[in-house]
Amino acid sequence: MPSLERLMRQAVEAFAERGYEGVSIRALNAALGMSHTFIADRYGSKEQFWRAVVVYAVDRVRGEVAGALADDGRGDAERLAAAVRAFHRQASGSAHFARLVSIEAATDSPRLDFLYGLIEPVNEAVRPLFERLSAGGTLRPMPWYVLHFLITGSCGLYGQLPLARRFGRPDETNGTAEADLLADLVLAACFAGEPPASV
Image (tube, rainbow, N blue to C red; front, side, top):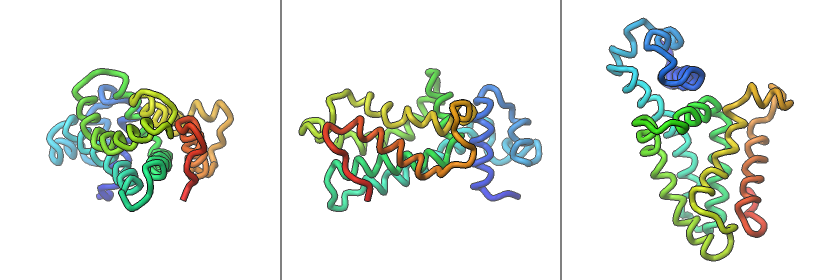
């Protein structure tokens, strides 16, 4: 049997490519290389399996961002910048998850509620930094939700690789350098002055 990590990665890919409604339990089991009863036996239902997959994917991002946000003596600006860079590095290695989120975010549904409930603690950890930096004039004036979409919207590059190829993105690219470039551009748009340098 494949490792849990491999199963979860394959499941994220399957849900990202076809959407929740577009993939059957039978197709999921086949994509995972498992018996036709694997999901029912292990998770009970497609919905419960989807939830387990999303928890797995969000936990990977949340862990990286939480580490970057740690209150370890750095200022708010340095912590916010580190969190944006950590988010982009993680997202660049999780292209299918970026696509899955994009699919789910387009429709108001209980799945979106569940997904939002998972990412809300990260948002709430970032928000006090945003509010203090905004009040002090360090960030450009913008609503909170604009900051969110400024940071996450550029993840389309990671989740829309076929379109990116049509724009000339090579298949062989340095994902970390690309993620760092995108994060730096996002930070330059957010900060009223020079954003903190990468550490």
